[in-house]
Image 1 (cartoon, each protein chain N blue to C red):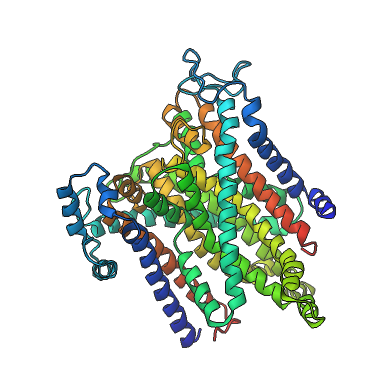
Image 2: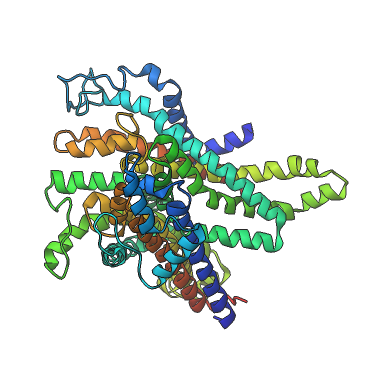
Length: 274
Length: 315
């Protein structure tokens, strides 16, 4: 593990990605504690303010402090995205590994069906599911998780298939190791790594998808300080204050770039040959 | 391309379309405990609920509802909109033509920008130009469409007052105003595609430039331009067909958001309107048309790839 971290930090992408993701996680952990104001604290005399000493990022249409809202909203956006991705990855890994284990016609049928499901664009899939479940943050989380499942199933399957064919697996079986040992000690560590890489990159999609659902009015509901929702609300007041749009937009892109870079960095660190 | 491959791929596409129709129908009509209550809300009168149930055939078994719906769809009949009372199919097809215009223009612009960017990054690998392209592509894929669209409107329409922020004018009615309304949506949709495709072109070209036949071409004394354009690029760009086709998925998702923001009356906007109004037949038609477009595009891309790449013999 320390060796992996060292290799990760040696690539510029990995180091930058790790730094950004660490900052995002820090905001999630202590954001609400260090935020100068409450996310819904109103300062009616200070509406549409540009950044100042009192309000470092300015204020919105009700005179709420944008920095405080962003810090509180980190949980609504980042935690939701990570949870949705983890859920989708877990479901996908189960389906994909089962399919690889089955092999033959069952595998073929499952994979063709997954290809077919993947022809529904994820945003459209998520929209349909939210439409079914009703609009709320939790339903948006479930929708994103379901929308991610087919792609993760595909990746898990191909990873599991490659690993199963490796000589060290055959060697373990040949020297008489039991199935639990082979699966847990030999296969799992090699299956988990590529899936974690893919998951990290997917978190950035999830952040964007989640924010998009909230933007369209189908995810988090006002007055939640969710970043996508903040952009959506700020659009009506863009001629009064551009800061209201800029900060949450940059926050979303910043986190998405961070997870993207970290994912690519991890991939390079795990695959030294490329 | 062999006949077997053509048949297998066609069979796969038909299977895909069947699965897609099941998903769309399942999520919209079959799964909700009571689609009528879902549409009219908890406070609807029993009479209104009964009327809706009869109109949508909700009193029949699920498989019969699906059969009736699918039979209608195959005849181009998607049912009547609950919101306007108009046939949904005609509205969606008209909307689709506008969405396709947006999609085709965006893909065109993307190719014009992404392919040269990818080439420059590949031949200047590891230098400033390469770094620049990779920064552009990271930034591009990390801005969701709604953010890009909002920022584009903020700068181009609100600050610089160069172009209209929203609206749509048919090209047949007033070509100049029509184009002015299309610039910002096309720009927004292209950004994420450029980011993605330029990265792919770069990595494909880098791989090709390291092959033996390129070294042979260089050792033969061909100048770098001939090596690049006559030998390397042809093979490097071939996989781009597949990647662009797969990107149509992102494109369709992006179009939903971009049309909504720029008030461009395409399929995406119709779908959002339908979802907000809980207009079941319109949701089904919009979702099915979008997903079907994606699978047909990928079908055509696979055929084109098989026809162009003589090395691959699909059994």
